Length: 398
Image (cartoon, rainbow, N blue to C red; front, side, top):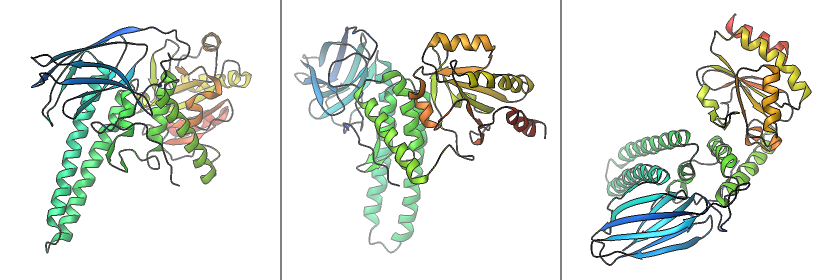
């Protein structure tokens, strides 16, 4: 099946997607908190150059501020912001840099008007992440361009066939390395909108780093971590809608009624009762029982008896329980954990059946569960009651 994802604005310098609405609205549930943002910059050989700052919407650029460099190449931009957003900083002649700025940040930027020169940025963690990703991306593009030049130069030579085979192997090696780097970048920075850039990056026109057909699980992971925190931002909402559509299409085509044994369990991040984040991959190396439940579900509360039996019977072996709640009330969720004395890992998005994790695991009822092995593959699903104990016995006490 061919899955098509619409790419929001792509910037030539970084091939980056925007992260905010074109309207100046705060995140849902939050009151607008305007804060001053300052960008102090220095451009080498930039005397008299003009600097332009645009906010990047998913479908358009919004002009924010303009400055002219003084004789030393210094400039300053000031504006107010209500929420984190992507910005495009442009300066003579054709240089452009993508920044990810939080309200209240004081950004220090330095660069050069000479084409091909690098830049540095401080005071903005999101922008620093984008700089790291941009450097790695540009290094990869340069390596691919060199392989392309060598290929063009070898055409017509007697040994071209063997040369091309070697160049193809090197091309795959370079792209595989950047693919792996980008995946690590996404997993390591899952709370930052910067991972949208890594998700939508391209090697060239029509050559995405993560292809929706082959890497849908990566799109699902980014959706699961960003939609929970940044719902209301246009690019995040667009990604969420596309992931939902792709998942429905995939299920219709393959006639899947549930997640399958032997598959890699989709990774996800959700919130603990104390507000901290926990990812399924944080528990890698253990057998993990992902248990879907809710404090309001009588059947779930009954199933907790068997979970407690399993947890205390196998607590000395690499076995963990990650219970995912479909509650809406945080207090009801916490009260149920305390009343049932559930002493293992708990997470919830507190949006009932609208949680991205529900979609990832195609949960249609609770209680339900998925047992994952230490390598991240699904061992079995819906091990309820005594079946759970019997399965764990067969694994740990064969």
